[in-house]
Image 1 (spheres, rainbow, N blue to C red):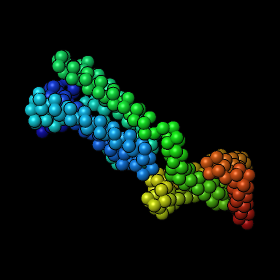
Image 2: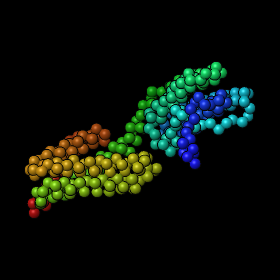
Image 3: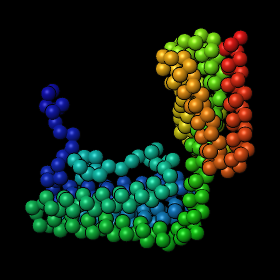
Length: 327
C-alpha cells in the first residue's frame, strides 16, 4: 500500500528506451498540432490571417509526426508505446484548449514560438544526457526539427500577416481590450468613486468618528464592487456583443468599483477627523481627474467635457453627502 504512494509520478528521461523516446516525440508532435488547430479555431473569426498561420503550422506538425511514425514502424514495428509528455519529468507542458479560447493574438504568436523553442532546448538537453549514440542522434535530429518549426512560425507570420494586416489585427485587439477591460473597469471606477461619496461623507459629518466612517466606506465599497462585478458578468455573455469573457469583465468592473470607493474610505483610518477628511477630499479630487484622463485617453472623450461631467457629478454627490451628514 505504501509503495503506491511513494512511487514516482513521472519517469526521468534517462529511463526511456529509444523506442519510448520515439513514441514520446510522436505524441508531442500530435499534441502541438492540436494546440495550433485550437489557436486557429480561437482566432479565425477576428484574425483570419493569423488563423491560417497556425493551420499551416499544424500541417507541418502532422507531417513530422508521420515521418516519426514511419521511422518507428521501420525500427520497432507497428505498436507504439503510450508515452506522453506528462509521463516524463521536465518535459515542457502545454496549456489545454479551454485556456486558449480567450488568449490575445500577440500572446498566441509568442506562445507558438516559445513552444517550439522549449521543445528544442528539451531535446538538446535530452541528447546531452543520453549515452547511446543512436539515441543521441535521434534526439539531435528532433532538436533540429523543432528549431526549424520555430523559424517556420516566423516565416508563416511574414507570409500571412504583412504589416498592414498586423496593424488591422492590432486595432482589433486594442478594441477588444477596451471592451473587455477598460470600459467595464472605467464604469466600475466611476460608480465606486462617485456613488460612495454620499454615504462616506454623510457618515463622516454625522458621526465625526473616523473608525465608524471607515467601516461605512469599507462596506459600501466592497458591497458596490460585488454588485457591479456580478451585474457586469451576468447581463451579457459577450457572444453577441463581442465584449469578451464575462468573468474578465466582471472582475475588471468589480475590482475597480471597490478601489474607487476605498480610495476615499482609507483616509478615515487616520484618527483625527479633519485631517482624515482633508486627505479624503484630496483623494476624491485625484480620483475624479483620473477618471476624466482615462475617458480622454481610452474612450476618446474630449478632456474638458469628461472633466466637466465627472467633476460636476462627483461634486454634486459630495455636496449631498455633506449636507445630509450635517442635517
